[in-house]
Image (cartoon, rainbow, N blue to C red; front, side):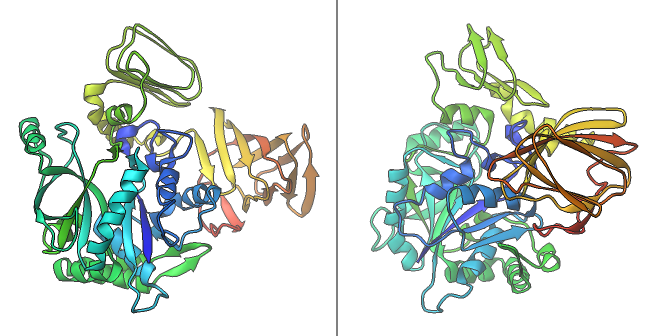
Length: 477
C-alpha cells in the first residue's frame, strides 16, 4: 500500500507579502489555478495510492481541510502539529498515522512530499516513483535527487554512488553536501554525479521508525508518546502537546538519511522547483516575450525579466530590469531579483515591531468563510464578512464593542440574545455590547455581510465563545 504523506507545515517567509505565517505559500495558487497543496494532492492521480496522510500546522487546519475538500480528497488522517519540529518528527507522526489500524504484515510505503513544490512533468515524477518502489519494498530509504539545470547555491546536494543491487536506476548515496558556494556548485553540475536534495522520500513506515529509533532515539520516543496520546477533533488528529514539546527539532537528512547505510537516491528530472523565493517562482512560471511574469492588473513599459503581481489594484512599471513588485491589499514589496533572499529580513523586522502583516493578510480566513477589514479608525472598524453556504459562526459576545450588520447578498439567520430571525438583502440589525449573537447562512449561495464595529477596543481577542461547531469554544482564534 502506497500512502502519500503531504507535509504542509512551512511558513514561506521569503515569499512575503503573499505568503504569511497564517496563510503560507502552500495554500496559495502561485503557478496555476490550483494551490500548491492541491497540486501536490493531484500529483498522485494515476498512481495506485491510498488516501493521503497530511501533517499540518494546527493554525492551518481548516484551510487545508477546505482545499482538499474542493478536490474531493478525504485524507486517511490529518495530523496537527501544535508547533514545528522539522521534518524528521513530522514524518514520524505520519508513519504512526499510516500504521494505525493496519495489518501488521502489510507495511505501508510512505511517499513523502512537501506541499510547496512545483513539478511540471508529472509523468516523469510518477515514473521515478515507480522506479523507486522495488527498492523501498526491499527496505531501502529512497530519496529523489533533482538533476540540476544550473549551479544553484540555495540547495543541498547529493552525490551519487554505485548502482544499488537489484534496483535499476537506483544508486547508493556517496555523501550529502551542504549548500555550496557558486564555484563548488559549478563543479558539482559539471561532474554529472550530483543532484539537488529535493526533500522527497519513499520508504516503509516501520522501516523509517526503526531507523529513526536507531539514529535519533529521542525523536522516536517523543513522537511515539505524542501519537499514543493523540485524540480526534472533528476530522483532525491532535497529538499530545506535552509529549511533543520535548521532541528535538531536526530534519530527516540530519537525523536519519546522512547516517543510515540504507539510503539510496533515484534521479528525477521533472521540472522541479521548491519555489523558495520570488526569483525561483519567476523561474517556475511562464514568462512573456520580455521575460516578465505578470499576474493581475499589470501594465509594464520597457521592463524586462521582472515578476509583477497585483492583487487589488493597478500595478504600473517603467524601466525595470530583473525586479520583483508584489502588491497586496495591505503591503507592497519592491526588490531586485538578486536580493529576494533578504525578504525574510523584512519579515523579521515586522515581527520585532509587533505588526500583524508578518502573519495575517487583511482578509482573514476562518472555517466558516472569511472577513476583510476594509476600513478602520478611532473607535470604529468596517469588515466584509463572507459566510459559506451552510456555515455558521460561533455563538459569541464581546465586552467592548457593538456591531451593526447589513446583509448585501444572500440570507442570514441571526441569533441576538433570545431572538432568532432572518435578514434578507438590504436589511440590517444591531448587536449591543455584551449580547450573545451569531450569524448563520441557511442558504445555498454565499452570504455577504457588512459589519460596522464601534467601541473602546476592537481587537480580535475580545470574543467569548459559548458554542462552536468547529471545536473552537473557549478560544479567540
